[in-house]
Image 1 (cartoon, rainbow, N blue to C red):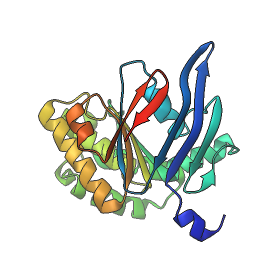
Image 2 (image 1 turned 90 degrees about the horizontal axis):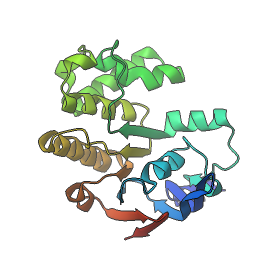
Image 3 (image 1 turned 180 degrees about the vertical axis):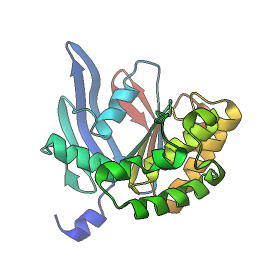
Image 4 (image 1 turned 120 degrees about the vertical axis):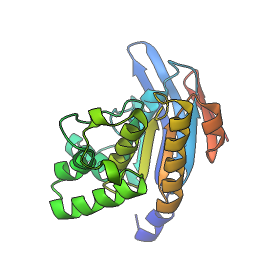
Length: 228
Protein backbone atom coordinates (compact mmCIF):
# COMPACT_ATOMS: atom_id res chain seq x y z
CA UNK A 1 0.00 0.00 0.00
CA UNK A 2 1.37 3.42 -0.92
CA UNK A 3 2.00 6.09 1.73
CA UNK A 4 -0.71 8.22 0.11
CA UNK A 5 -3.24 5.40 0.43
CA UNK A 6 -2.34 4.93 4.08
CA UNK A 7 -2.79 8.61 4.79
CA UNK A 8 -6.35 8.33 3.42
CA UNK A 9 -7.08 5.20 5.48
CA UNK A 10 -9.13 5.21 8.67
CA UNK A 11 -7.04 4.83 11.80
CA UNK A 12 -8.97 1.64 12.59
CA UNK A 13 -11.27 -0.53 10.52
CA UNK A 14 -12.97 -3.76 11.50
CA UNK A 15 -14.98 -5.83 9.03
CA UNK A 16 -17.11 -8.90 9.64
CA UNK A 17 -15.88 -9.42 13.20
CA UNK A 18 -17.25 -12.57 14.81
CA UNK A 19 -16.37 -13.88 18.25
CA UNK A 20 -17.58 -17.21 19.56
CA UNK A 21 -17.05 -18.79 22.97
CA UNK A 22 -18.04 -22.42 22.74
CA UNK A 23 -21.53 -22.35 21.24
CA UNK A 24 -22.19 -18.75 22.21
CA UNK A 25 -21.71 -16.21 19.43
CA UNK A 26 -20.98 -12.91 21.16
CA UNK A 27 -20.20 -10.78 18.09
CA UNK A 28 -21.98 -11.37 14.79
CA UNK A 29 -20.26 -9.67 11.90
CA UNK A 30 -19.44 -6.36 13.57
CA UNK A 31 -18.07 -3.58 11.34
CA UNK A 32 -16.67 -0.24 12.48
CA UNK A 33 -14.57 2.47 10.88
CA UNK A 34 -12.77 5.03 13.05
CA UNK A 35 -11.26 8.18 11.58
CA UNK A 36 -8.30 10.08 13.11
CA UNK A 37 -9.51 12.39 15.89
CA UNK A 38 -13.01 10.89 15.96
CA UNK A 39 -14.73 10.10 19.25
CA UNK A 40 -17.14 7.15 19.18
CA UNK A 41 -19.29 5.84 22.02
CA UNK A 42 -20.38 2.20 22.16
CA UNK A 43 -23.46 1.60 24.30
CA UNK A 44 -25.38 -1.55 25.11
CA UNK A 45 -26.73 -3.67 27.93
CA UNK A 46 -24.41 -5.44 30.34
CA UNK A 47 -23.22 -8.69 28.79
CA UNK A 48 -23.82 -7.50 25.23
CA UNK A 49 -20.14 -7.95 24.27
CA UNK A 50 -18.91 -4.36 24.47
CA UNK A 51 -15.74 -5.23 26.38
CA UNK A 52 -15.09 -8.17 24.06
CA UNK A 53 -15.36 -5.84 21.08
CA UNK A 54 -12.96 -3.35 22.67
CA UNK A 55 -10.47 -6.14 23.40
CA UNK A 56 -10.55 -7.22 19.76
CA UNK A 57 -10.17 -3.66 18.48
CA UNK A 58 -7.14 -3.30 20.74
CA UNK A 59 -5.73 -6.72 19.71
CA UNK A 60 -5.93 -8.00 23.28
CA UNK A 61 -8.08 -10.79 21.84
CA UNK A 62 -8.34 -12.23 18.35
CA UNK A 63 -11.67 -12.53 16.54
CA UNK A 64 -12.99 -15.96 15.60
CA UNK A 65 -13.15 -14.56 12.09
CA UNK A 66 -13.12 -11.19 10.40
CA UNK A 67 -10.54 -8.58 9.46
CA UNK A 68 -8.94 -5.78 11.45
CA UNK A 69 -6.66 -3.08 10.06
CA UNK A 70 -4.84 -0.14 11.61
CA UNK A 71 -3.85 2.88 9.50
CA UNK A 72 -4.14 0.72 6.40
CA UNK A 73 -2.11 -2.19 7.78
CA UNK A 74 -3.82 -5.57 7.99
CA UNK A 75 -3.29 -6.99 11.50
CA UNK A 76 -4.63 -10.44 10.70
CA UNK A 77 -1.27 -12.16 10.28
CA UNK A 78 0.67 -10.27 12.95
CA UNK A 79 2.52 -12.51 15.41
CA UNK A 80 1.89 -12.11 19.13
CA UNK A 81 5.17 -10.19 19.46
CA UNK A 82 4.16 -7.89 16.60
CA UNK A 83 0.78 -7.27 18.24
CA UNK A 84 2.48 -6.48 21.57
CA UNK A 85 4.64 -3.86 19.84
CA UNK A 86 1.60 -2.50 18.01
CA UNK A 87 -0.36 -2.09 21.26
CA UNK A 88 2.56 -0.50 23.07
CA UNK A 89 3.22 2.08 20.36
CA UNK A 90 -0.13 2.74 18.70
CA UNK A 91 -2.95 2.07 21.16
CA UNK A 92 -3.70 3.52 24.58
CA UNK A 93 -6.03 1.80 27.05
CA UNK A 94 -7.99 3.19 29.98
CA UNK A 95 -10.40 1.16 32.07
CA UNK A 96 -13.04 1.66 34.75
CA UNK A 97 -10.41 0.83 37.38
CA UNK A 98 -7.15 2.72 37.02
CA UNK A 99 -4.75 -0.26 37.51
CA UNK A 100 -1.94 1.98 38.73
CA UNK A 101 1.05 0.25 40.31
CA UNK A 102 0.86 1.21 44.00
CA UNK A 103 4.60 1.12 44.68
CA UNK A 104 5.34 3.76 42.05
CA UNK A 105 4.65 7.49 41.92
CA UNK A 106 2.23 9.13 39.49
CA UNK A 107 5.17 10.14 37.26
CA UNK A 108 6.65 6.64 37.30
CA UNK A 109 3.27 5.06 36.47
CA UNK A 110 2.92 7.38 33.48
CA UNK A 111 6.42 6.47 32.28
CA UNK A 112 5.89 2.69 32.55
CA UNK A 113 4.78 1.94 28.93
CA UNK A 114 7.84 3.80 27.62
CA UNK A 115 10.18 1.99 30.01
CA UNK A 116 8.74 -1.32 28.78
CA UNK A 117 9.40 -0.18 25.20
CA UNK A 118 13.02 0.68 26.07
CA UNK A 119 12.73 4.43 25.51
CA UNK A 120 15.33 6.80 26.91
CA UNK A 121 14.45 7.85 30.45
CA UNK A 122 15.17 11.52 29.78
CA UNK A 123 12.64 11.69 26.94
CA UNK A 124 10.08 9.78 29.00
CA UNK A 125 10.49 12.15 31.92
CA UNK A 126 9.85 15.09 29.59
CA UNK A 127 6.71 13.42 28.19
CA UNK A 128 5.46 12.55 31.68
CA UNK A 129 6.03 16.12 32.84
CA UNK A 130 4.05 17.48 29.87
CA UNK A 131 1.16 15.07 30.49
CA UNK A 132 1.12 15.82 34.21
CA UNK A 133 0.72 19.47 33.33
CA UNK A 134 -1.98 18.82 30.73
CA UNK A 135 -3.97 16.71 33.18
CA UNK A 136 -3.52 19.23 36.01
CA UNK A 137 -1.56 16.69 38.03
CA UNK A 138 1.91 18.28 38.11
CA UNK A 139 1.54 19.01 41.82
CA UNK A 140 0.92 15.30 42.48
CA UNK A 141 3.80 13.91 40.40
CA UNK A 142 5.66 12.29 43.31
CA UNK A 143 2.56 10.91 45.08
CA UNK A 144 1.78 7.21 45.01
CA UNK A 145 -1.63 5.99 43.89
CA UNK A 146 -2.87 5.43 47.45
CA UNK A 147 -2.36 9.13 48.11
CA UNK A 148 -4.53 10.20 45.17
CA UNK A 149 -8.30 10.58 44.91
CA UNK A 150 -10.28 8.46 42.48
CA UNK A 151 -10.47 11.27 39.95
CA UNK A 152 -6.74 11.94 40.26
CA UNK A 153 -5.92 8.27 39.79
CA UNK A 154 -7.99 8.16 36.61
CA UNK A 155 -6.24 11.27 35.27
CA UNK A 156 -2.89 9.58 35.86
CA UNK A 157 -4.21 6.47 34.07
CA UNK A 158 -5.23 8.67 31.14
CA UNK A 159 -1.78 10.27 31.03
CA UNK A 160 -0.18 6.81 31.12
CA UNK A 161 -2.35 5.74 28.17
CA UNK A 162 -1.08 8.71 26.17
CA UNK A 163 2.63 8.67 27.00
CA UNK A 164 3.51 6.70 23.84
CA UNK A 165 1.52 9.23 21.79
CA UNK A 166 -0.89 6.66 20.33
CA UNK A 167 -3.25 7.41 17.49
CA UNK A 168 -6.07 5.44 19.14
CA UNK A 169 -7.41 5.34 22.69
CA UNK A 170 -9.78 2.58 23.80
CA UNK A 171 -11.72 3.38 26.96
CA UNK A 172 -13.87 0.86 28.84
CA UNK A 173 -16.25 2.71 31.21
CA UNK A 174 -13.47 5.17 32.19
CA UNK A 175 -15.85 7.25 34.34
CA UNK A 176 -17.92 4.35 35.70
CA UNK A 177 -16.10 4.22 39.05
CA UNK A 178 -16.24 7.99 39.64
CA UNK A 179 -18.87 10.35 41.00
CA UNK A 180 -20.63 12.57 38.47
CA UNK A 181 -18.35 15.59 39.05
CA UNK A 182 -15.09 13.68 38.67
CA UNK A 183 -16.52 11.60 35.84
CA UNK A 184 -17.38 14.70 33.86
CA UNK A 185 -13.95 16.19 34.61
CA UNK A 186 -12.19 13.10 33.24
CA UNK A 187 -14.44 13.04 30.17
CA UNK A 188 -13.91 16.74 29.45
CA UNK A 189 -10.16 16.22 29.69
CA UNK A 190 -10.35 13.23 27.36
CA UNK A 191 -12.38 15.24 24.86
CA UNK A 192 -9.94 18.17 24.97
CA UNK A 193 -6.96 15.86 24.44
CA UNK A 194 -8.72 14.11 21.56
CA UNK A 195 -9.30 17.42 19.80
CA UNK A 196 -5.83 18.84 20.42
CA UNK A 197 -3.90 15.65 19.62
CA UNK A 198 -6.16 14.32 16.81
CA UNK A 199 -6.58 11.25 18.98
CA UNK A 200 -9.23 8.74 17.92
CA UNK A 201 -11.29 7.46 20.86
CA UNK A 202 -13.64 4.48 21.12
CA UNK A 203 -15.35 4.49 24.50
CA UNK A 204 -17.71 1.97 26.04
CA UNK A 205 -20.11 3.73 28.38
CA UNK A 206 -23.50 3.40 30.05
CA UNK A 207 -23.64 7.16 30.58
CA UNK A 208 -26.03 8.54 27.97
CA UNK A 209 -25.05 12.16 28.64
CA UNK A 210 -21.41 11.39 27.85
CA UNK A 211 -22.34 9.22 24.87
CA UNK A 212 -24.38 12.04 23.37
CA UNK A 213 -21.36 14.37 23.63
CA UNK A 214 -19.30 12.08 21.36
CA UNK A 215 -19.14 12.43 17.57
CA UNK A 216 -21.09 9.20 17.11
CA UNK A 217 -22.92 6.78 19.38
CA UNK A 218 -23.22 3.14 18.32
CA UNK A 219 -25.24 0.43 20.03
CA UNK A 220 -24.24 -3.20 20.43
CA UNK A 221 -27.26 -5.49 20.75
CA UNK A 222 -27.51 -9.24 20.12
CA UNK A 223 -23.97 -9.21 18.76
CA UNK A 224 -24.72 -6.59 16.12
CA UNK A 225 -23.33 -3.04 16.13
CA UNK A 226 -25.60 -0.32 14.77
CA UNK A 227 -26.06 3.43 14.86
CA UNK A 228 -24.88 6.68 13.29
